[in-house]
Image 1 (tube, one colour):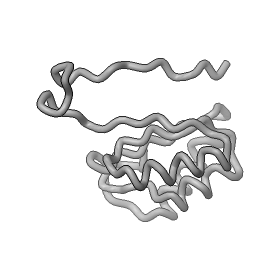
Image 2: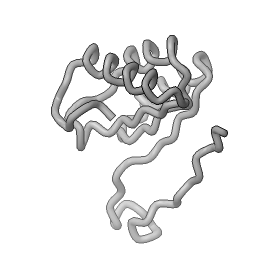
Image 3: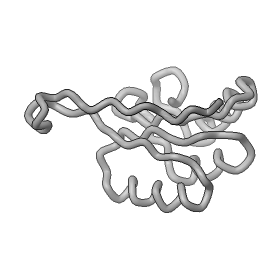
Length: 108
């Protein structure tokens, strides 16, 4: 997620992601949830992050189909995983608002 739950620029978010990934020395997931952070992770930022660090993928919580399609295209080029899901209301989900839980891939 972008840092601090306040709007930040893409350059700041990218620097934050890179620092976190380099510090952890583990594959990293980005989490795009602008409804809570105030900052949407642009496709250019995802592509720039995918280059120099070991990472696993992105959790995409934006309800924009065009953005998701572009992430899938980028996923194929950069070899990472896209998890998709957005905040669902009980009215929009036939299972009463409960989303199915998925297990992330084992990285180790």
